[in-house]
Image 1: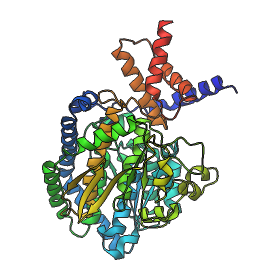
Image 2: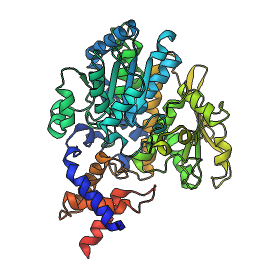
Image 3: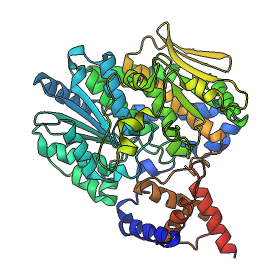
Image 4: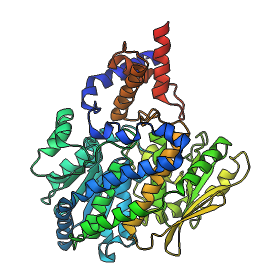
Length: 518
């Protein structure tokens, strides 16, 4: 089969099931009214752009506060599970997979009593290796979620807490349905879109929502600051919501108090230092230099933000040392206390990595693949040669005298986080990093207004999102002659020759505009 007929076939296959992934009417896919002009604002007034994003985060946190009673019910389930000697499993995909693994790390770092730490087991679509790069199309398979759950030893009496920002991820749904079959301890399913919207657009979501053997908590927070970028507000409320139920399983009434305290902290914290760091990281890239984020204290949270920039904004992902031809990522992570990759991953995860050695997938999900992402102390010297300046450019994020400190380009910023419990400290850092990286991407022209024009179509949902954005950008040029199917065929055609750092949405728009003028 030649290249043209192959892409035509793939596009036709997608269109046959496209109705299952046409999610444009969901809140999480909509445009937030406060950020419609964010890409322009970041170039004229970074400080104001920072405050706009803080306000969107605060809106989301207040929505979570309103659900504190429902979170108390989940906390009681966690407590009852532990009291019976059973385990609590945490499941997610992409951003929710990373937040699930983050919560397991926090448990091992002291968020729960030491005797319970080993009884929290998190997994994400693709295993630990997917922390760095999501495995293409893995999340589209519900049977993979069920298989990973079983292979981790889930059994009767154990509890599964599933998180999915959209409420429709097949992998997470598959794991949840299997947990309901295996355990009399009914699983929990947390998501961030209104029930009526999900039931209308996704039969798989309706199956979960209407299943009496699955307990649900709807944590809808409205549109994301960048349309569809659920790594932001949705994953924040899910991580914080589930984390608080774990931290306060023995005293659920404290959940509301902790949320109120955190909202006050975020409201009054000084976010103004972010402008300096955004501007200087942007300038570093403009000068063809490369950055290394360095931390001994916040590895999982820094890894999450830096790796999620790639699929969201079509940046080159972390290079793998086992693949010499891999192009180099603008930024990378270093854990300076770890002398080699094996030590670095064990240090970051607070346990030995759990990788998938499934036949046909080892090259994407296996242990060798994970260790090819060298986040050890060797990272700095390796990447020194990449920068035009021949220097190591370090952005350090550490805990100094109990407080959060950022240091980069000769400047330091401090936040008084000593008063925050571990979960809230990391959540606050997540907010800072999300704002930082999102506005940095705005300066790099990686979105238009608040539309994610550099989205990478790596699964069925993102193919649909790309098609919708192409149609919207064409509409803004008063071009309405193309159908959804024609756009999908154009996406598959462009995808065959797309480089890792190219914007498929914009390339397809250019292609279709050119075709119209012929």
